[in-house]
Length: 213
Image (cartoon, rainbow, N blue to C red; front, side, top):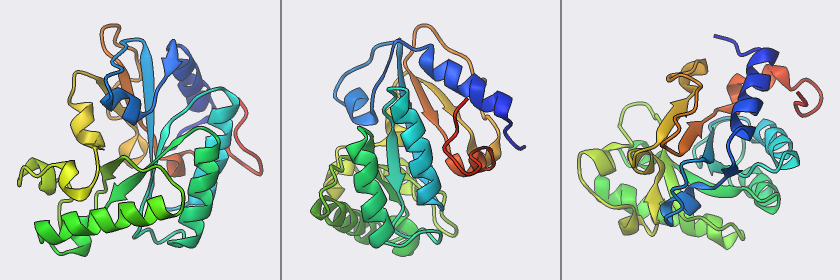
């Protein structure tokens, strides 16, 4: 599926229909307003493209959470990750860690937790405020297994929360995984909305400038 200009206008209207936007950390801290929207972006490849969309969100007063991937093949770590992460944070967005630790550590859970802590500490040394992570769909090993199978806690990696665990807390969870909506793009009145958007699926709409519906 390829998202169209009509889709991004619909997405914009859906987000702005909510009374307010919050970061995932604010939801973790107890902000469970059923009228709130919390957006998440996994920066798997093109961090520069994500930054252009981060500008677009900020222009509309929308704050979301961007997750940077240490093993990304489309941007450099640490240089581009640091530079764009700091720019996004300066816009009011939150920065988190995209977790590929089980893949890197070949399924060794204790080593994966140590690796997550090391990545998070590195990001904090750049001046980023990193409180949570989101698992990446890496090949060969399941990054979610740390929490889902082995019942380990984010605190063991020096983190406060994991995005998929937060999504289980009575929220309306919507994702554009693989370039199509995995749940209806609609509001559930008695639940806060969490949405995962990979801007790579929308990049063809940006053209030479940030998207301006």
